[in-house]
Length: 368
Image (cartoon, rainbow, N blue to C red; front, side):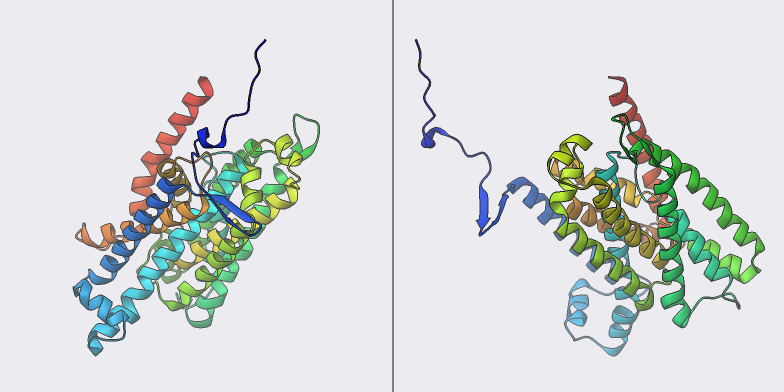
């Protein structure tokens, strides 16, 4: 007869150290922290390069001097009034799209669930284009640019998300009612196609100056980014970050199956609605700032997940990857081509093959 004894505490190897502060505790993942630190450093380097490189090149040391309050009057004008708003807009928009993509993919358990594929970006585009082509005189500027376009994009994006949410509602396999992720993705793809047709119709009904401005906006461009376009997108990103931070445990629980999530005491439909609403707000305001940037919300969470090797889409890392992607695309569009390309052209060129990769990978998993 053999007896089993509990292992001595000294023989138990601690795989990951824990951090505790009162009632708060977390696991310290050193490789993940190192990866995030590298991403932050890369983001800062790209940010400095995006400000320094242009028709009038400024050394990075001088850029730091101007940001610290020094520099000549001409350098302060170029950096503070022209390039700094553009670089900050790229960071904010990329982070907002990456964050929105991480939330939607985590909730729907689908790597293809992103604001641009689910029709949310198309809904925001309908609202923004309707304001642009209806502004008169071929431009939406001043108060209209600061309030009208972001407000219309937000309202249209939220209305689109609500419509998709309601159309995806039904009975699940367990006999209960709720939103089925697979149905929501299919409905979103259909709504996206319909809304892009509405956008095309609005452009054909507009005057030539309005249609030209709307078409340029639809390519996704940072050329006209300024403080007025940055503020609404920054507000949307800030609110989404606060909600995501407050709902971190809930978001982690929603990555499990419905039964497990209910056992953990999470009200699935309520929490899904809150998180999806904040993701819609972030992506809609980001879209209103620079136009639709294809595949950023799709690719950023999946890249972050592979870099950190996490079971789910990491929220903060996804925001960092999104910011790095848009900043990098802006640098490429301005320095590697004879003309200044819209940044959306670069994100679409890179994101298209990545979408094909995800489709092939998802299909292989489904057939195994």
